[in-house]
Length: 156
Image (cartoon, rainbow, N blue to C red; front, side, top):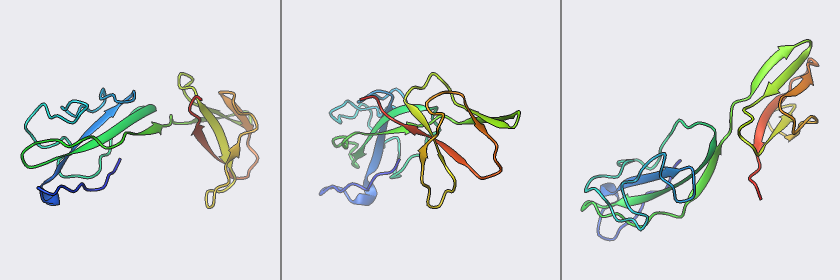
């Protein structure tokens, strides 16, 4: 996750720290707590949990995530949280060779993923795998390159 540095007419940009919120539900903070209320009011007089950085890297399990950030000034006052954004961490594909075929699978407890394939990566022309949406998928090993990915389709 990354964000642009904030501006504050009373605090130099170099004096602002940032407070990250990450959750598994909209508005949630069960992954990274901002130690602030939803209106931005800080619960602790300290720098934000992202410190001076304008990015964060988290190692997260597969799933849907929602996040936002707020700027903290040198008096430890928090601004409003930025509009919330979301992202999806796709599960890893497991590929196993068996009887001249490749069996491709992923965790079944994560609905909404579709297997896609491409014959090259640059530029990739992803198409739905012919055996989609079954899990596992069995494809013949043909000697030609195939690349696979999971595409997430959120519920409508």
